Image 1 (cartoon, rainbow, N blue to C red):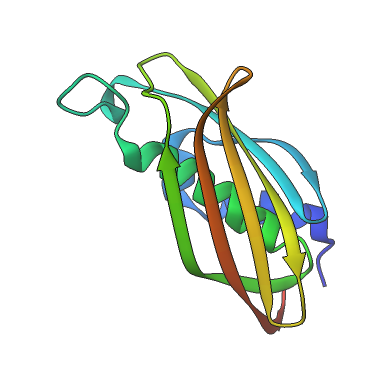
Image 2 (cartoon, rainbow, N blue to C red):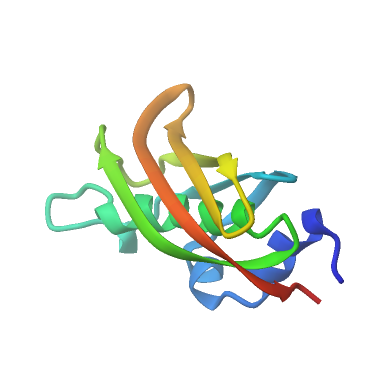
Amino acid sequence: MIKGTDIPNKMLSLDPYSQWLGIEILDIKIGRCKVGLVIRKEMLNSMDKAHGGITYSLADTAFGFSANTHGKYAVSIETSINHIEALYEGDYIIAESVIEKVNKKLGFNIVEVKRGEEIVALFKGVVYRTNKDWE
């Protein structure tokens, strides 16, 4: 079985979408993961602001990585996001996911997305924890 804090790196190596986004892992602990990315021109919408899907994708990646650090495959069953501030080309954003509660079958995560110290989005997610170990 693979060590819990090694799982996010393995997940990123198998995830072409997160690689295309330019997501980098900044910190990993059991039940926590911090990731970041730079907003690029091709991530902008028709209003010259970052598409909401970019913020969502970064938060969702942090969520998935942290949820799997317990060593079992964990799959998303419900998520939501609140977009608080607009983002622009060149902004560097960081998402940190923290498992607030975990039991045998479910995990509940909160993800803060920040530009510097400013919270730009809040994400919440629930995972179903399978019996399958990461190898």
